Structures are given as structure tokens and as C-alpha cells.
Image (cartoon, rainbow, N blue to C red):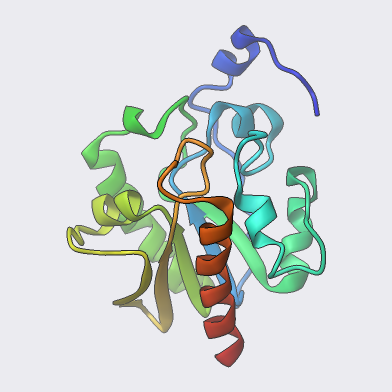
Amino acid sequence: MTRFTPAELEAARDRLVPDVVAGGLRVLFCGINPGLMTAATGHHFARPGNRFWPVLSGFTPRQLKPAEQAELLSYGLGITNVVARATARADELSAEEYREGGRLLAEKVVRLRPRRLAVLGVTAYRAAFGERGAAVGPQERVIGDTRVWVLPNPSGLNAHWTAATMAEEFARLREAAEED
């Protein structure tokens, strides 16, 4: 993996990272927003401590690397974000950015029509959609024909979830998506 200086990472602030999407996906995974490492590399969930790629491996025949993100499409999977701009930390985002991100995400989901939308982070889901009581797991909300699921935030900073308990939640979604 390429090492970036603090100045190089800071230069990636506010960059946009292209979505990995197509119409009719099985699951569209939605992060909060790109981190600086993601923006610097152009690869989603690129920070070494992020657990997205290891816990996603049940959806794919092997663990993919961030640089292999385009392969997700061949498995009917994609990645987007609630808020498009890159920051060092999610707490740099405003409540208005979350709400607007939720609105834009709903439009994207209606257009792309994935079977499932999986929002990675219950706090981000609550902020984006005004669902204060939401918890990890399937949601009552449906966007168009798309069923919504909330997964734990895979950031290494999320100490509430271990890799094992996070993998269990991803497996619950995978099983539900296979029944669709």
C-alpha cells in the first residue's frame, strides 16, 4: 500500500470519490463519507484499519482489496456514501450535509434500484433519514422497491463492534439478500 504524508492526505480533503454502482445490484453498501485515505487512493474503505473488506468476504469468494473494488459489480454489489466529500473524521459533517446526503441517496436508490441498501453506521442512518430510534438490522423504511438494512460502521474507530460481531451482522444481511 502506498504511504501518504500528512500533507498528501490533507490535500485529499473535500475530494469526491466515484461510486462503484450499476443498476439492479443485489446490495448497495453506503458508507458515511470518504476518509482522506480513500480520497487519496480513490478506493473505498482504503484505510488499513477499516474492517469493511474483511467482513465483506462472505459476499465474495475471497477477500478483496480496496484497489479491487470494481470487482464488486460482478457479484451484484456496489458502494456509495451518504455524503460525497472526503473528511478526516465523520464528525466534521454537518447535520444539513447528512440530511441532504440522505435525500440524494434516496434519489440514487430510486434510479439504480438495488434490491437492498445497506447503510454502514446507525448514527449516519439516523442523521440522514431522521430515524432517531433506528438500530442495526433491517429497517421498516423502503426506498422505491429497495429494502433498507443498517450495518455497523466498519471503521477501526468503532470499538463497539468486533470484527467477529460485525461479520455476523454482514452475514445476516447476506442471508436475507440471498432469499430475495
